[in-house]
Image 1 (tube, rainbow, N blue to C red):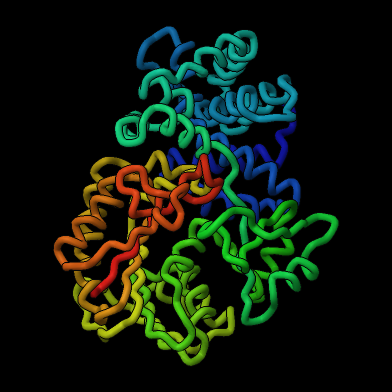
Image 2: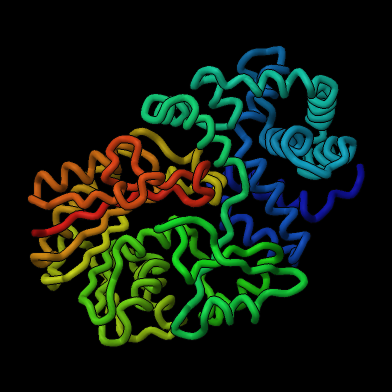
Length: 449
């Protein structure tokens, strides 16, 4: 039995914790790499293997099932994890020698105490290797939602949803984008340094920071794209100089457009990424109230503001649907709980945790929060509703229903940015991960006349 690399050990452990113990991949990954002391390139490789194998579980399991003679027969858990990692390396990863992928998967199976399954893992991966071209050809067939679900490793229901709502081409493109690395963008804390100063200070041999590309509202001036090692970025984030934030997320506050000295209400504020962006815009003369029902997330908001050096925001731990909150705000942001279908590339296990029932559940919650939010808005004020999902039920249908119930006027954002217009109603924006290379945020702006 060959010695398994620490990177594969970590990835294997993350796979098992994700699918056997129902732990979140990101949290499991952090613990596994820290316990092994992995950093730099080793950490990056472990993440590529772990996240990729979790994302590609659907494709890998379908390939394994097609090779198993007895229908319904499933490999033992340790073998299943080794196969998911091995198939990912053989078919979807670069720069891994084939023999190493097979050998390491077999060794992982044995090291996990499943010697009896090692031969099965070895045989199945070698068959995958022999028939790789034919397997990849079969996976390339995404002519129906069901086949696309296997090809791009998605649950059937989600492939069908996007197929029906967006059409086959966009559905395929979104699924493919969800398997690519997520965007690495950072926002400069302009209260402490300028974007130009950040580029000069943090760029080096291992890291390049460049202005984010794209037209309004994709790229506020303080957004930068990070290329290379993120170690310096993470250190700068801990010091409150930079904040990891996608262009899609930053676009929400661009649409909110908070001005110096204004009264702003930020509902569903946790973990505080957009809150810090708002605080920088309103300045010390502004009156910003951030509301978050979760105690831990409310604490995250307070810590984020403190880290950035902002002390002019009030953080309230409360449920916006029930609590009494001051009214008369000039701008209200509702960045609502949602199904997160626009952020699948950065959350590897998210696609396996979602369901149609979740969409219905959060849609009801969104409607309740939005109705209360409208009551906090002064005449002449504006309400921005955003989600990081791609679902008509949670997005355009929700915004239209709110306008009708509360007598609000929908501002035509699509007229200002037609290339970002929502496919169901062009008055709204729907950022698409495949087209815009960022998180799939929906954004609506409604006015109280």
